[in-house]
Every structure is written in C-alpha cells, then in structure tokens.
Image (cartoon, rainbow over all chains, first blue to last red; front, side, top):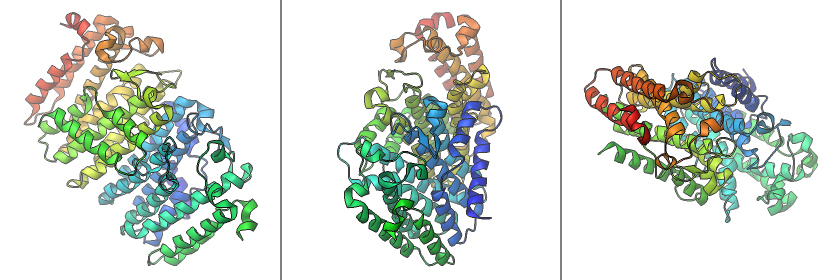
Length: 289
Length: 289
C-alpha cells in the first residue's frame, strides 16, 4: 500500500472513532471538515517514510504516530485561522473551519483533534505497548510548551523574539516529532533521526516564507502576504529572495546527508530530494533551478 | 502527605516542565495563572482517593493521572470562558484568563494544558509503563469526542439536545475518568469504579445547576444565572429547587453504595459523604438538611 493510502485510511479510522454514535452532529461534521480533504500530508508521510526506512516492524505503531502527527497539525491550522490569530477566511482552498462552522465549534474542534491524537496512539499501539510512552513523549514535546508548535504561536505575542527559536518551535518541532516518532514506532533510536526532522523543518519554514512572499494564492489555497501584514518574521524579508532559495537548498542537502545507515536509507534520500522540489513555489522554480 | 499537598506539588511539577527555559514568557505566566490558585481540585482528589482505597501501589502513576485530569479541567475552564462560549469575565474569583491575557493566549493556553496532561502521563509513569496506554485511553475518552467534555460543550450548538446525554458528556465524563484512572493507576479493574464516577458526576452537575440558580456569586467566585441567560438546560428549571436537592442526595447515596469492597472502602465512603455536604450552596443548606 502506498504511503498516501495508508495515511488517509488511518485518519479515516481515527475520525470514525471520534464521530461514533450518540454524538453532537455539528462537531462531527467539523472534525471531518478539518481533516478531509487534506493538504500534502507531508508530516505523516515523513513519519512513515522514516519508519519504513528503519524496517517498520510495528506498522500499527507507525500508523498511529503518523495519524497523531497529522491530527495535531490539523488542530493547529484550525486554531491558527481563528479571528484572534490570523483571521484567515480560506484554508486548503475552502472556507476556514470557523468561517464554515463558527468560532465556538472551531475552538472545540481543535481541542478534540488534540485529544484524538493522543487517544489514537494509546488505542492503536496495543501490540507494542512499550512504545506508547516514548511516542507520546516526543509528539507532545513537538506540539506543547515550552518548545513545540503551541510555543511557536505563543512567541508571536512576545515583544522580543529570536527568529531561530520561533521557527524551531512553530515549524521544525513537528518535523522533528515526525522523524523521531517514526523511529520510535519502528523500534530504533530516535536520536539518530533528530537532525533529519530539524533540517527538513527549517527548510519547510523557508519554503513557507517564500510562498507567503511570492506564490500565486490559487496555487497554495490561502492568501499571501500574511507575514508582512502581521509584521511577522520571514526569511525572504531577512535574506532576500535569492538568499532564501539558497538557504532552502542547503537545508535539504543537510537533511539528506543526515540520514543514518539503514536498509532503506537510499530510498529515503531519493524521496526527500524529490519532495523538496515541490517546496519551491512554481513561479520561482526558474530562480531555484 | 495529604491529598491536597500531593495534588499541588504534582501540578507544580508539571507546569514547571511546561515553562522550562527558552520559553515564551507571557504564555508561561498564563499557564501558571490557569492552574494556580486552584478551585476545590475535586476531580484529582477523587482520582487519588480511589487509588488510595485500592492500595495505591504505584503513586507516580496515580499522581500523573490526577495531575492530567486537573490540567484538562483547567483547560476546559479557560476555553469555556472565551467570548465565543460563556464570555465570562470572572473565574475562581479573579479575571478569566482571556480577560487578563487576551483571547489568543487563552486559546493557546488551553491547547498547551491539554498536551501537557497527556505528556505528564507519558513522562511520569516510567515505573509502570504498561499503565500508560490504559490511563490515556480512559482520560482521553473522558474529555474528547464523541462522549467527553468537549462533546458536552459541542452539544450546546445542537438544536435537539438530550439533557442526560449532555450532562453525562459535559460533567460526568471527567468524574468517570477520575475514578477509572485512579483504579488503573493502582492496578485494579476500572470497570468496578465506573458507577462511582458516574453518580458523583451526575450529583456534581445537579449541584452546579443549584449554584447557578441559587448561590451567592461571592461564594462560588463567578456570576450566577448563566444557564437561564444562555437558555441552557438546568436541573432546577426541570425539577424545582426541592426536587433538585433530593436528586443530589439520592445520587450521593448511590455513589457511596457503589464503592467496591477493598481495604480502603470505608474510608472512601466517609470521604464522599463528607465532600457531598460541600456541594450544596450555603444559603440552601437549611433546605437540604
């Protein structure tokens, strides 16, 4: 089964549990709306790709980890779009969740997705119960305080902000969560997979900054220019367009070089170099070539 | 050590992890503000009381479970007070979190507390790793969709609402989470402790309805009359004042009677009958006597 099918099937399975009989129906619709149809599913793909490279000896654990990471990502998007944050009307090319369902439902849907993420790991890892604690450990660190994506969003309220610490928390932390959780799910040492997540997360943040400055809004399914509008740090504002593209390419190279020796390391290296090409917005591809 | 000291010490320990160095400082203040000083800590007290009655053979597990349950309760209060929910200015006798720190920080603080709850269980149960999955299972069911407190809040958006299903989700579910998690933490069968949580949760909901209708706002630290103002179901509106007080007393009796035989069952029974007296607002105590 290809990665995308595994991911969608397991997200469906998790959301089905959360929307079982006797439920409040509007919230059920909201949860499905938040998760499907998805974006590129880049974080769960990365999690599963690492698990596969490392042997994937407990697929139910790697599926649960990948599902949890994507649910947490979806939750962060729902809350990040709220009027008191980015006040974004559009997400993944359709009305943002609070635009479609109202703010109350959007706050609760984000909460429910966070809970469902951890519940999924506890429920699906019965064959490898010794991996539940370590998985929840790395994934909660990737999203919570003091260094996960919630901390990243919280940095936006601070007067003094270190761009590197901010990006590490807001974006890279969940990529680190994805690679280290993939490793734990496959029963190998997560420390060897930390740098891969970190470098890819940093690369993704630069790519996100490039898209925000220079992409076609129709291509990315949300408005551009949000960082300038909210006076947020952005790599293009810091390094210029050419400098940001060079930084992105350096980071992808470092990521590929960091992959530890394992039976699937060549396959994973090719996958990452291939995926990285998709990170540059189409209208900048000639600049990047 | 008495229960209250154990609870506060372990909440301090969890919040200290979440506010470790290199953090966004406003969010750290907000997390402390959300958790301290607390209310009656009734849910973690119940969780620890059950664990103690059942032998408490892994105190780090029962401490982690009690801490997680209180953190989740605090998170639900922060989000429930938001302008798009109850729009409450006052909580526990001081400005609600969004009133003190703004909406953005309040949404994120709730999210961070949810994550911290699950992280605490994963981190603190290293001596009994086989209990991590079952603990996270019952606690996530108690708070998430389709039947936990988030579902309870979500029911408020529905046109058709079954009062019993609504109260079960919004209030009783976390009491069930507290008793069953206490049992799991002590290594005994959680099913035998389900009814205790359910009956106490139902009793607490009736007491909450009584307070909303008839208490002195200074006594409970928040405004009264919110259910009528938001046209929400309330046991006093349904059963009358006398009927609601009778129902509360019946439920407490059922709770005490449901306690399974164990070395601490008599102690627990006395504790519950004693605590129940505090549930009735002071100005109704003569009606209840």
